[in-house]
Image 1: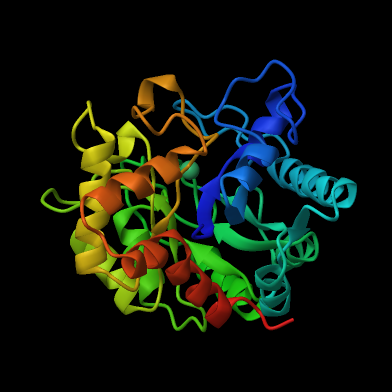
Image 2: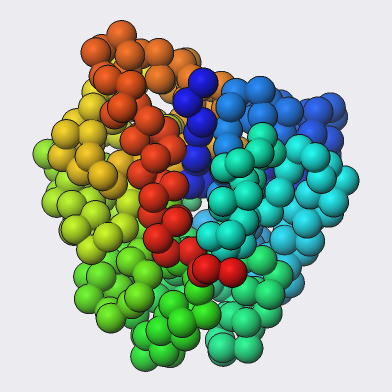
Length: 323
Ligand SMILES: [Zn+2]
């Protein structure tokens, strides 16, 4: 079975608001899966994102977002402590090597949107808590950068530039998912040691960039800079409101042609609702269904491996901090 690296899932955030056992799935939550199902489906590394905005529809309100992120990190540490033979946290290249030699499921911690972060010491606290990926924004702007939904695109703030430079030096990878077009431009032009990734996005071959999805041209820029692009697996990431799994497979194929060394999976499982669910991609096993469709469409085993894990593995091997 080809291992799966998935650049974005929200299980750790869902745990905050749903009452269920993350390992077995027992409880009231009927979402995209649980840790047992992830393991059974052959996931090897999953980026777990802490999303910390409490209320966001039309508002910029946050309630102790950093505290929420730290709490989410602690819950993940706790899970790893409960299931040490099954799970591990990956914080550096050394851990990645250990992960690849065993059969545990690895997590990378991401903070989705730098809400509440105003100084380098808070960044350092997040780093110490195990976070290694920083999403600059969610759709709404913050003190660092402009988000995808903002009607005025200011790109990065002065503080943002300073913080991102500091984050790069500390060892964080920067994630452009949910960023505004100008934020993309400005971050791609920064002299960073670690090229940014786009963890979960749609890539639109014809259309120009929309608020939440990027154009193929933009995806190429990210990959040329050394980054990778995770394709998300919900309807909102495609043009067609009735997207089928065959269409999703077609998009993966296109990206395998256009950005062969940069296409990866960023499913967004646990992060979207039933209305956005594509038939065949109802849960974490969906990536295996997609793999079968791609195989039927004639995609080679080599290309499948690049999409499912190898591109992400190569990127993380190159740019995670060494130890
Ligand atoms: Zn997101």
